[in-house]
Length: 367
Image (spheres, helix red, strand yellow):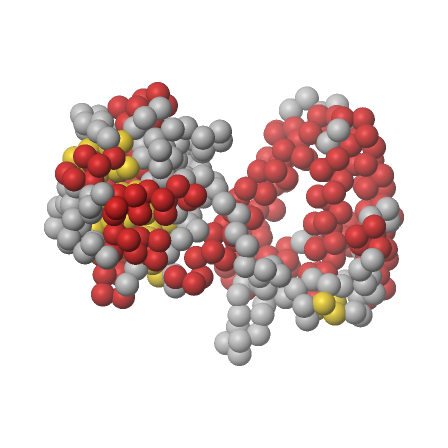
């Protein structure tokens, strides 16, 4: 495609990396905004020689503006620049927020810009290591139909794989990614803490082969059998690789696990570990029942064990024959979304609308 002058607003982990990738594809980067020391160092490392400017000047100089700011700052930033007349007709404006489609750019679109939403489904370190990881990375592309090819071309130039996503689907898409990536990290932290309390010197070394095999197997199964079949029926995908006491119907083991994890919480204050184990084991039981991996009596015993001492669960139906959301034990079909349309927000950059660093904002969940 035509070489474009790129302006990067937000030299956080995502903005600096994508700006560097576009530069490597032949697009000159004409300016970058970077307020914090970390942002300036990242800009120096990934975009050497690019002038560090304030946001309005970056926008003024650019033919393509890359907005890589926290989700919650994006709408205010776009509207604020529109109010000052900063946007230019024919300018391409791309944002990287997973939560939003192109609609959040409407104030800029009203001034003649071309709006595109690109979201890489990847975690970022904000270093050059990320550039090679962009190769083959899926990017969700949302834009008005006539300009979709521009967004797709930009993704291909960065080495990614574009996937067109409807505007209305963006919140659920982002919630799914955040649920998978962020909560995987929490699970590792919880399991590592429990192993350390058990006297294991290097929890990561113990978990690595087990979790790597489990993740690889479940992802392969999800790709091979996840989603819906030719008749539109939900298939089981990753749940078919489930192992452990729930899969075996070992209610006694599950009860023992809850006892020792509850004790861990009493001793260390890590009460979230037992709560997570209970919630996820209940979900695993429901999905295993729905997939035909457990007999009804096994599911009933597991759900009874998991309900012990849990007032919320005691108030809920525990008979695997009772359906909530269409499957036994209260679990939804293997690929049904949650009961509401809520999303899990993850920060995208360390540059807010006001150019200040918010606590925890200098990180990235999955793009």
